[in-house]
Image (cartoon, rainbow over all chains, first blue to last red; front, side, top):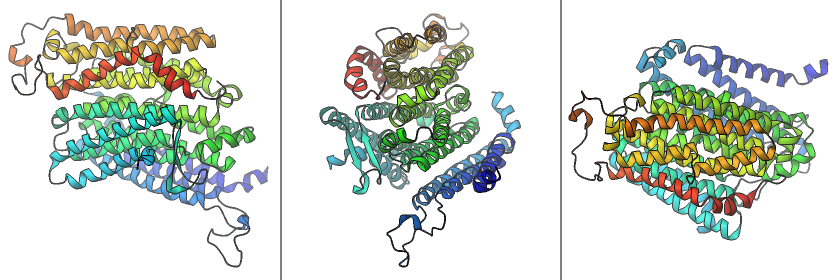
Length: 124
Length: 504
């Protein structure tokens, strides 16, 4: 049991981050706080991928003349890192679009409070 | 050159999307013709792809010459090449139509608008063609980001609607990413065909189940399946008419296509319908969604909002077809993706024409004068509405027919009842408009000038005083509904049945 908890500690941390992010996106009323939650949510997924690349007693995936290339188990998997570089770019683009929408909303309504905005949306 | 044709469509659209802001920065008028050229090019190339696939069988394209599973590959089989052609054709007509309305709806924003539409189409074509799960994620995000922009470009409320769509969309996309992460950890591959081979050896693994659930929920949000549809009504209502006419036919259908691809061609029918009750859950939720969407559509007074709720119901039909997981249901779902794209395209374009002519699209304020002003648009609307209701020989009848047969084949009478009841509800909310347009007399106090706000402009008008550029796309799309209906047997036999998922 303790092994299950401590052996996977990084995954527990990632789950906690995921939940914090989701909580922020769902329950916070301020749109910028929602975006903070969104960023945490995306970053936790990036950490999940990077954590899944780790191997015990393996080194960075850059060829080391001492280790050689014969044994792939001596290097951690580089693919997840490459994928996450793309995912980071996607995340940055999403944040950019989201913040520009938030600015647009603030210009129109002079508020970023979701409850007030929902009132505006209902009244036509 | 032509060997590279699978990759040419997204490449052409992406290049045009980048070229437009650069070339049209000084002359905004250039944006529209450039977009039309790119869109027409994508139609030509994707028809050529359909022809090649029909003649020689599935095409694959390996990026950078790396063979799968290491490299990224594009796969065009009868299904994907055909869906790509349908998407590009509908987009071509919507973009043609947009030339006449975008100045009024989004003044001074034509350059960003057209750049975004091309990015949107690039993402859509990429999702359809790709054979790699992570590549699909990247295109899904390109596609979604462009859609947020297209919706947010509209009136005041559009920004709020778009923001809500963005929050939901990011959750959907991230769930999908997390899901393929689980799959990658178990299978060590991202190539769809490769995962299809590896998965049977690891099916007992809980990580596969977790990955599948996350992918289904993520795609469900993008597709607006019933309990995850919250973003859709506001987004479609407040977006500019020309954006809703582009996003509504293509946006949710692409996610539905991706879901079909992943459920049936990556996980396999056996796994998603018998080992786990995934398709049952989708079918039941879709059935609730069909009724919910139809009832809500009946309660709306604004035409675009009514069409948005009707979209939720129509997505329900596609979901129901996926959920039946038998050949007839599958045929119905794929056929309905095609039909609904054309129907919703035509209906939203008519709503756009209506807004341009009368300045509103409130159903309660419609009367006979609208039909006199817009005879061709209203004729097109009638055909599309009849197709939504499902009257033969329009296209909508045949997809519902296959879905009903699928439900009977499955022995599930509840689904059959849902299809029939919702057809009645469809009839109720469309005939409400048709009755107003064909029978309701205009209110007496209106003077002629109020009824003709833009009448008498002279050039480029059809018999009833309609502009060619606004009318021809609408008429062509709704006329093609009749053609699809009449030739549906050919489409089913030559396209859909040629690539039935294994084990169905």
